[in-house]
Amino acid sequence: MMAMVKYSAYLLTNPASPRSQLCTLPSIHNLQHTNQPSMSSLKPLHISSAHNFALPPELRRRVTACQAYEADRSRPLELNIELSDEEAGTETTQRLKIGLYFATWWALNVVFNIYNKKVLNAFPYPWLISTLSLAAGSLMMLISWATRVADVPKLNLEFWKALFPVAVAHTIGHVAATVSMSKVAVSFTHIIKSGEPAFSVLVSRFLLGEAFPVPVYLSLLPIIGGCALAAVTELNFNMIGFMGAMISNLAFVFRNIFSKKGMKGMSVSGMNYYACLSILSLLILTPFAIAVEGPKLWAAGWQTALSQIGPNFVWSQNWQLETVF
View 1 (cartoon, one colour):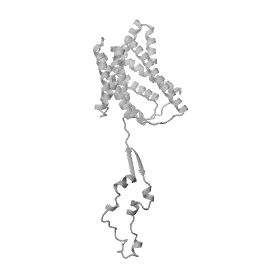
View 2 (view 1 turned 120 degrees about the vertical axis):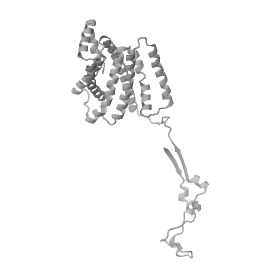
View 3 (view 1 turned 90 degrees about the vertical axis):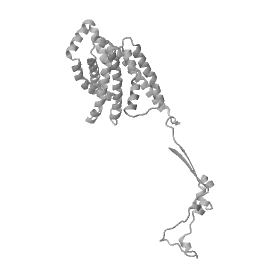
């Protein structure tokens, strides 16, 4: 709330002003030398009427002029702040750096999905592939910390407690997405996973009670419609693959919610945070991968893949692990 107050100094400095005349009271000293009844200072002053103390309407406008303006949150606040050439150059560099990060992430994500699908076609054990992906990322960060390439984070028990539900949701989402890609085409999996914003809005609305503007809900209609159209027209539709992508969406939504609520005040960089998340998810996933698939199936699948594809399978497996993180 911003307020502007204008006060007229004329009424305060001019002794002939009506306010000066109305606010003047006879003093006790002057009353003692007059024939008027004396005013005792020990008795409370009684005013029978305060009507004469009020200012006329035309003087009220001259005394105070108050105007208030409440900022509209739906519109951005326009501030005419001029940046120096150095600050403008720094801002431009920062934008270019963020754009480079997005491009690099997108390119590596494409490579990861392609090689992940190739490995799953030859070695259809998504639980082990998910475990090895997390292990590769964790190993890379451990080497970075040991060689001081990345700063070693200062962690405590409270951090790991807050990270645990995030890691559980991350593990479920990661495994579900890999299971989905092992059953259907990569394009179909990512089309279904593009519906994650819809899951985020619906979960926030019905479980957390957060309200969104109407345009936000309307923007979800094309996303939901596109996912439904892709599911109906998919030639190689598989229910396990479809449900895996849906479960992955829901798990990643809860991962984001848990991360936002539980990790407040944690001074850990983004890279170190994701590294710790991968390490904890690896510890959670490993016993489940052994229980669901097991070393016997992995050994048999490895021999089958080597006999059908040969050394190229090992090369593809290494590329898939190198691009995961």
